[in-house]
Length: 155
Length: 155
DNA sequence: CTTGAAAAGAACTGCCT
DNA sequence: AGGCAGTTCTTTTCAAG
Image 1 (tube, rainbow over the protein chains, first blue to last red):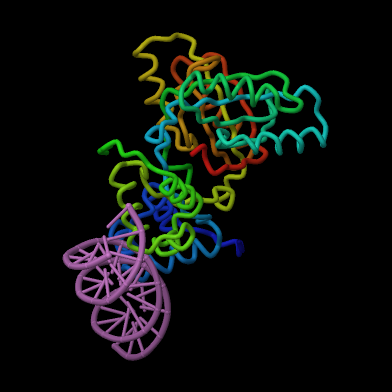
Image 2 (image 1 turned 30 degrees about the vertical axis):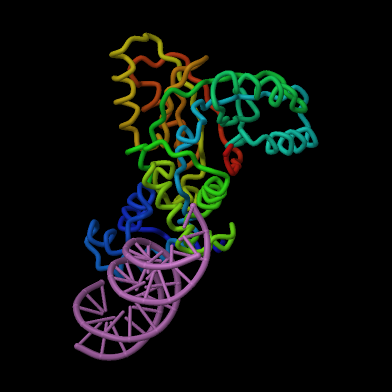
């Protein structure tokens, strides 16, 4: 939670790239990859964690394996904008379990949502019963995901 | 990579929710939360991992702390569609380091990109020199991210 | 920063209900 | 499948060069 503003060097960035790809790597393995001993690598990882650069660790859940085969991105433009509207909208949208990610954005849309549905029929139900009935919803745009590739990162 | 098609029960889903939020939790802590002993929890985690439901573990890197303060979502519609175009486009877009995520989608756009830039000026440079020069790029739409909230998941 | 080693904790194994 | 009692393996910390 504390951010003592450290300045990560090239070695730190290499560590971050490795851990962002696979957090099961041990400090010893990390060190072997970048030419450091286990304690040296471990201290760097700890420093990055304490500084908040490493903000957490998560498992990647294969939602398709759980029966959620359809991922849809929604762009939503609110009809009536105003401070209360934004908060009300966010509160309502956050209560929908199929909504994985809520992004407040600037541009053609006001919000972007990542939706996980079991199938297209399930998505239609969510869209009609849950999304279209949200307070203040105006224009809605949908994109069904076919495939996704995640890249190392800009660092 | 192997998916022996297991059927996760409510307890498994509870484990997945906990680990998706914080993968540093030990099997003992997980067990304490859901009322299982350490070996029982551990065996379930292992089973979920072997089955591929837990697809990996990643650290969350605070890109803002690394100087990338601007996240932009791009929707891209290709001008000339065709099999070779898609592959050529994907190869080229994947080579841009600031591109974090490449999503092939169906709908108004063909691709969605998540871009990490140091600031707006940096983003403009990426957009003009990298994105607009990609092979086959047609319509481009941009949304600057203000905030993002991730939710537990549909499971 | 390195090596070596010890302490703590987590992962893993059999066996039993 | 879950519980109990272990053993084994890392991780984490420390001492010393």
